[in-house]
Amino acid sequence: MITKMLIEIFQAIVEDTQLKRLLGFYEAPNKQNTDIETLMNELGLNAKQKEEFRKAYKEYEQNPGEAEKRYKYKYEPKSNSAADKFDAYYQKFEDKAKETSDYRHREYAKYNQTNQNQQNQNTNANTNPYSATSPEEKKHAELLEIAVGITDFEVIKTAYKKQMKKYHPDKFSEEDKKKHAENISMKVNVAYDFFKKKFNTK
Image (cartoon, rainbow, N blue to C red):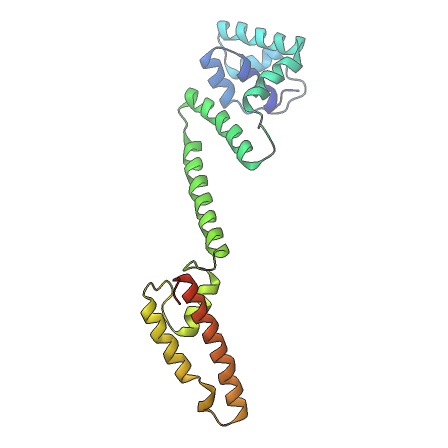
């Protein structure tokens, strides 16, 4: 059976650049009864290329394990990690690009790296409670009614005093309102402590 992998093995072991290019463009139909002559005619090989292809095919028939090893040595991922798999596939397409001048995989690599950097930034923001984009800081900033990412601690201090004055329990005589104010003032204190730690201020 002529498979995509078999075509790629032949591509790895032949020497002729033009033949490598033709093999790279060939869409293997997974035909069970396709013989080597039919395949070479479908590829449109000239006499010299046919001779080299027959040699590669014979090499594969005599020792398929060795031929596959040469193929895998070049394109098999070093491990099952996503990074190693990407490197292996990238190398494979990079080799093809040298023959076909098709460098679209490089654009994907740039996109992949940009996407990975963005994911890392998001992860750092979510794991660092003092990041301006962290949910925790957003919650405390909203409670103090200040802008997210503010860098002036004096503005935070003023906002804290304003909120504590607004929600001081002694201002309320009714029990339910008093308890609500106590709850809010406690949260305001927690928010203020958060920013004091962030700005390393006593």
